[in-house]
Length: 256
Image (cartoon, rainbow, N blue to C red; front, top):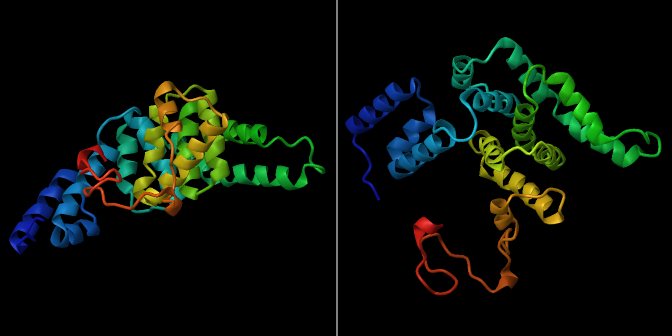
């Protein structure tokens, strides 16, 4: 465990971080002062999750973020608006993204109406109705980008219906699964890991039931046994990431 910093060391660290990022949020002071090891890990994850280039272009990434900020009502994320502009984002694109984020509950509404009023509204097809809504609101956005942004929105809302619909739409368009992971993973920051876990559970169930057909790499995830919460009936014991495994051997922290 790293020793806690002196006031001078803390100020120097925070000043350097502010100079590098262009701004500083309050929680950095708390972590740097009271949990420096955690702060280092936090910054490393932040870099890997939101800064380092992955599958999406800078503009695509910030389009997903803008939609997500609206869904999560995260007004403090103004740096993403600056990055959106710097990547070529326009007022027209922003308007389309905001409209899509605002319309996301309609996906659930169509499913509700179909489930309860199919006899009175036999022509209502939730998938088609949602597709028409997205098409009407996405403006000049590419279909796959609109659906990637909406996946993040539905995951932020905790809508399992919406998450499933978006993943099905993305697979129908043959969108690369790594792009799906990137867009979905951004919810970890504003909504927490549990929201990401829930969304991945929906995704996994769609693979298991055959609703979507994954690539060979993602099929390995689909076929992994024992996914889910700890089951006392499994005969296993709960252990930390650095302790002994259920086979009695020392576990490799890096492998976890």
